[in-house]
Image (cartoon, rainbow, N blue to C red):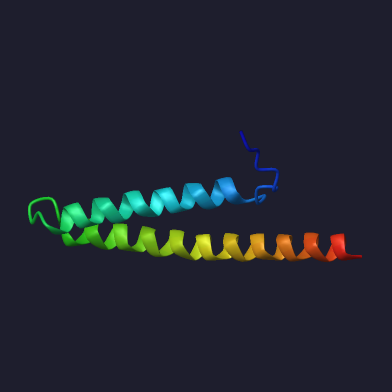
Length: 78
């Protein structure tokens, strides 16, 4: 049995949640685009905008996590 003692990133749970939501919306979008009855353009457009927004938020959260990691590394070096 091995234990992973490396600390998990502070924002990892949020990053995972955002990635999961993006994946679900992408799947939903793909299913809607193949069905004209359910794929009304305004619904597709709304999903695309939600995905874009979540991807932007994910990028910002990942950047924040990188800053946190850099600060922790610089503190441990001092």
